[in-house]
Length: 341
Image (cartoon, rainbow, N blue to C red; front, side):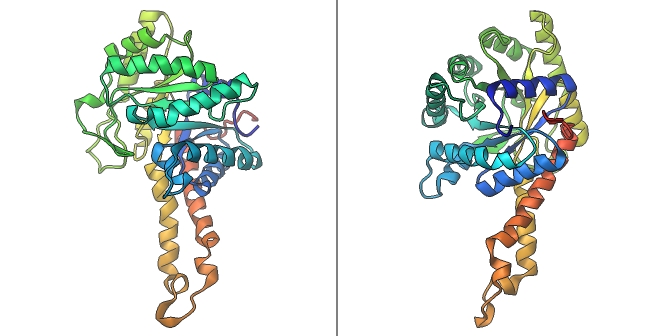
């Protein structure tokens, strides 16, 4: 099995939670970066999650077209075919949908998937994220309730964010300050609104100082212990151990110790984008610098087709990104964990 069914996706999450490991959730923007993600999962013998942001979806539809729904469906269709050649199971996810993008992106995708389910088919994606970090918590949870109901009808899982992730992601910017830390009260409010699974399964990104992008040492102060505090307090209140299936946003640039503590406290999915972007680009830069007079027709020469052929440097880009994903899988302890193993 290549693309997870709804039942298999739920099993993946259950296995991660019980085994105290997490899946790398890799943002892709093209067929090439998607192939690199599959290669990385396969090299690590790890199942994983492939996700697309609104900007990535627009780019995939064509930089002059910018159709976020078409781009999302195109990448999903490519994944469904190509993933059959890799010995891992992957889930497909849409990442960080802010309020202003709901009506032009996630709601249309959910509507399409609801019709697919009514017709006896599987939904195209396995989960969608509602990013309510830029609105008050009350409004965030009201919208989350509505989307959770739609997600159940679409046989998908909803991901929400309770708290604020700093830095910049697809045009949304948040300052690095005390608002980056979710509170126990926020966790209790979430369970009150969305339940603990009885209304539908959802993933929760509780923030503990997370920041998108990569910053110099000392700029970001992660406190993964917050996750344990919220899990215990909410769990004690509702009589359920570790009630949240947690997501680690802004995972690029984190230390192994920070990642390990977060996973110990219930993280089953870690987003990784900035590090994989660099890992994809770095080998390309190296190739172009080393083969300057081959990729360019310098001083009237003809260049070297073997040097500027996109496949030449594209394979290097894919290998570099795959290596970084395999490293993430080892840090998250998902390496060696496939449903077929």
